[in-house]
Image 1 (cartoon, rainbow, N blue to C red):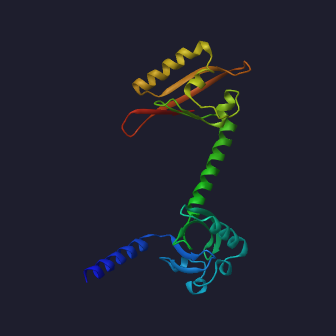
Image 2: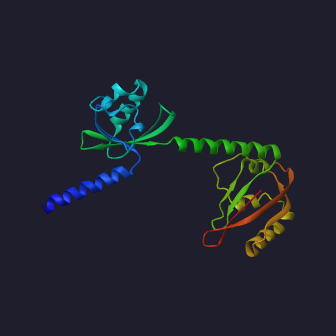
Image 3: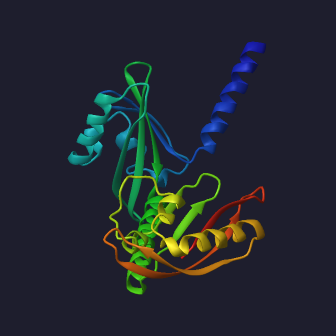
Length: 239
């Protein structure tokens, strides 16, 4: 009786865990035959369970997508194989990510996650970055970020143009930027930066840079400290 009670409790826990997972799950043979599934909301399914359970994946999906899945099945092991795809659902085109792993040697467990909102967010971010890039080019404004602790820096595309450089794989550091500052301005720029770091004031300064070909440009730069969560002055950002 005690063993049966423990088994019942274990099964109840497993059901609770499954019901808390919003992802779709499918158990299939390696030939694509659907054996079982898990879906909190049946509306998430492409077709009703009675249409696909016991059928092969190639009988349910359109040929091109079914072929992509079957190719993944051939590669599936104990390490997940990922596949992103789209389906025309009742509420429009939805994007999904399928993660497939071997199960019981001859079976495959597929976990399917709806990534439509993630895709839309990524697309919106790319569009926003492109608008910012175009705006910076039109206004001839560059942005920069400097990690004070590590010395690592991030430059926008326009910053590279100011320096007369093409983006490359070499580390972007504040030392690399300082090397382009006109020798007569370099000491004052470094002094201004030290004052900002030590006293927390905003950075606002004009100075010259010398491009590799010898052309001299005047730049006006503004920046400020961004404290880390432990209140240390960890980085500076500016234009």
